[in-house]
Image (cartoon, rainbow, N blue to C red; front, top):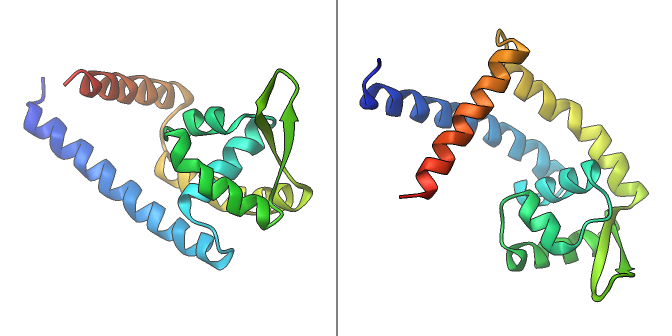
Length: 144
């Protein structure tokens, strides 16, 4: 069994690799005047339209107060649309606008290519195992 120091080193190297990939992606996002948080919001809405602000925040691991301003900015830029929630008059449901959908569809392949490169050589089973194991590490870390 590898030592905890060796595992820590591997996790650190994966983190550095992912940070480098995110830096590349951030450059692409800058060209579209988007932050990584903006992209996460657009991607969440692309995959699951009609979410409340709180649901969007949960889906990207943020507090609702941290997505309020970016959602408002994306709305003003015409990238998202909001509709009143029929079940909760205090909430709005958020969707990508046609412009936001077009942008998300244009950017997704570039981001998927980065992910594909990072996961190259891992079978679908390996990827599932990796996700399960990393999730276990996160859950264990949350208990600290």
